[in-house]
Length: 187
View 1: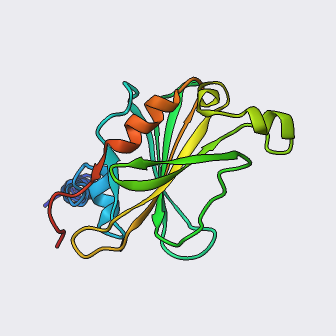
View 2: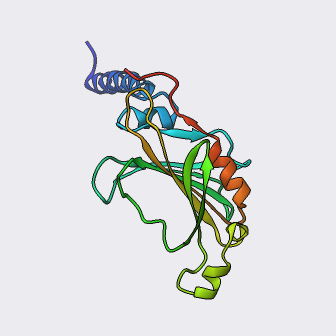
View 3: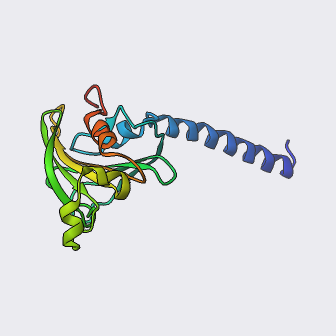
């Protein structure tokens, strides 16, 4: 017969062993790939960049859409001043406001029309008139475009933004490298 302290230790040890066997199985449910894990809860297609202009991913978040609708995805590459940020929402949803910018002539990103915005001061008419894609490296900017859905999912509004010295050419390179986050349907 066990003495009362031994029973307590045995019970605590058994409880620990049971709880530790549950924790790894819960963790194992995730794929370890944030894009794939996020995709399972969304009805629009997620994309990830193949080219991140040498910047490592430093953040991946699912955020509540302030305009209603499904969550949106925020991904950041870089840690210091030089950053590439990618925001993805369900097509038609307005989840965030990128801020004041000057809209320039659009471009094609893999055959899809993209808006070009530079963070020049639109209120200063002289600065706005002189604003060009070369200013992206100085003040930042972004591209906005919609990518098609895949595997029967909805299309995706994409904002690819660069700040802190990211050039317009680098911004375009990241945008053109967007690829489906999933290679097969989930489920």
